[in-house]
Length: 100
Image (cartoon, rainbow, N blue to C red):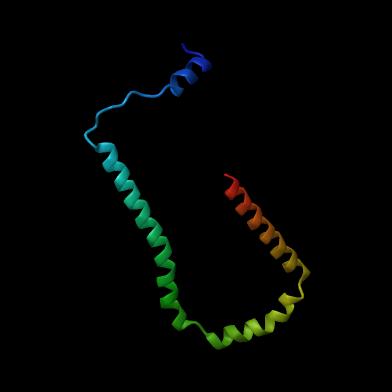
């Protein structure tokens, strides 16, 4: 029976190359195509739904609600605090991504 150190040593050793007649390259290319398709679908599907839904939205009622709520939102300390926290979080995230 192997202990943890021996198992770690076995698992960390590089494997010998196996001739697979391009199978790995084909699988990798297929995965990349699928990922590109999913990225495209995640971009275009919400736009298509919005394009279909927008003509049916009650624009006058929505604009009246926004006009009624806007002064309350502008004077809200809690929302200003939440917006500041979100801005700080985004800037911290961006700076951490740039360092990596």
